[in-house]
Image (cartoon, rainbow, N blue to C red; front, side):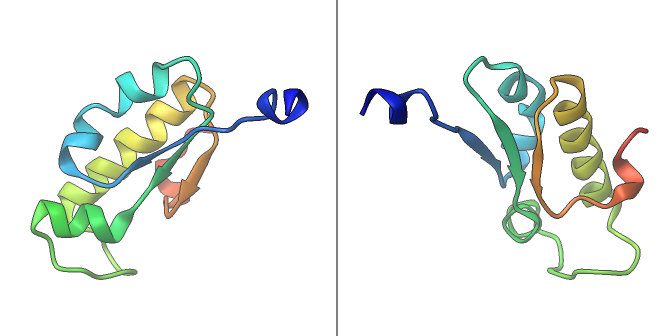
Length: 89
């Protein structure tokens, strides 16, 4: 049990407009190991047409940018769909 407790991972799922607004604060939390973006749930919450591929809606593009930026700023691995266009090299 002691060994298991030393290997806990907390992955914050960002799936709403409110989550994206707060992604920087979420990523900054000690104990949050990684971030996961839920594009379908985000699009539904934002009232956007659910589509994958093609040119993203500006609201969706801004959300991906905020998500990717927070992960990079705080050194958190990213899970879920994030276009490589939003990652800084």
